Amino acid sequence: MKLIVTGGAGFIGSNFIYYMQEHHDYDILCMDALTYAGNLETLKEAEKNPRYSFVKCDIADRDAVYRVFEDFRPDVVVNFAAESHVDRSIEDPGIFLQTNVIGTQVLLDACRKYGIKRFHQVSTDEVYGDLPLDRPDLFFTESTPIHTSSPYSASKASADLLVQAYHRTYDLPVTISRCSNNYGPYQFPEKLIPLMIANCLANKPLPVYGQGLNVRDWLYVEDHCKAIDMILQCGRDGEIYNIGGHNEMANIDIVKLIVGEIGKSEELITYVTDRKGHDLRYAIDPAKIKAELGWEPETKFADGIKKTIKWYLDNKTWWERIVSGEYCEYYEKMYENR
Ligand code: NAD
Ligand code: TDX
Image (tube, rainbow, N blue to C red):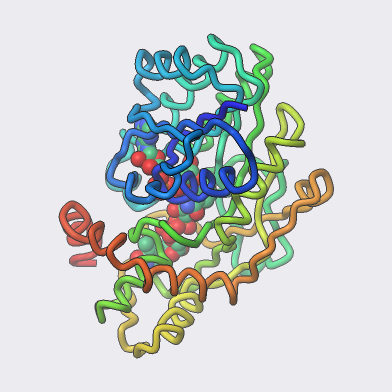
């Protein structure tokens, strides 16, 4: 089996490469443009496997993508490559359309041209918009209408529609998964959990948007990887699978938990101006993937968050290098005067 993992130098893609190396004997090619979010340091253990290779390639560069497909001839393509940070999409939407929409289209065209057994699109629960805070009985199912809020979620939803169109029109074998918020090792410190861990360790203010009451549904990254693997093995062509573990938490509770685990003072918590268009609550109904594929999350949040904090403590060099240079400029721009 020959597998292309796009965006494999990012957070979930790299965890997926490690997961697949552990559970299968595939030829894996990581295709990544190495944007600010991609880091080859993350893959140094994966490189030791002789069946692993890497190519630096922008998924929106048609000629380059076709060359990779021509040489490697993949059976399966899993598309993680994306601009993934909502706040950045609010500042500058253009690159989100270029990578998330055009890039996906180029990959779909390459799959048609060279023939594949499966194209899997890694999507997000954000395509469904948000749920009200006062209706805990409501959840996103696969038939919840698309209703996007941010340029990021609009670009991901557009990509999903293209994937479905290529299935319907050209009979391309595709699947789509829509997962809730992930946490775990190798997550870029612009996202809530690693940002709070890094700031806590540096005794820096912990910027909580609004009142911190927005709710996210957290899943340990390895459980997401396992779900995608199960979809590749047994998922039905043309289907969408929601992935989530019924683990909803308000942002402020996550931040307080991290402060407590690290042993710092809650005085570090600083309430800042809210995100524009901030989605209130995400909550996945995972009944379909559970019933059809038997998937269930294995890591409880209480254990996963401890493992994650320990990972950031044990791997300071990985993230300390990142939270310098370009990241400092980003941080100043995003958080000063807020
Ligand atoms: P990430 O930002 O950590 O990694 C993205 C990777 O894609 C990076 O390695 C980057 O270099 C690469 N990339 C960006 N533009 C590219 C391009 N034009 N060509 C090739 N490579 C490019 O993101 P992540 O958090 O690992 O998310 C991976 C995927 O999962 C995304 O599609 C995201 O929408 C989706 N997702 C993420 C979450 C989450 O909580 N992080 C939840 C649900 C879905
Ligand atoms: O500094 C912060 N302070 C804060 O209060 C940051 C970075 C975030 N937040 C809040 C905003 C959200 O309510 O925390 C929550 C989580 O924020 P992010 O980590 O930016 O994630 P989110 O916007 O929920 O999107 C994530 O989940 C779905 C991923 O980044 C997406 O790629 C994925 O599709």
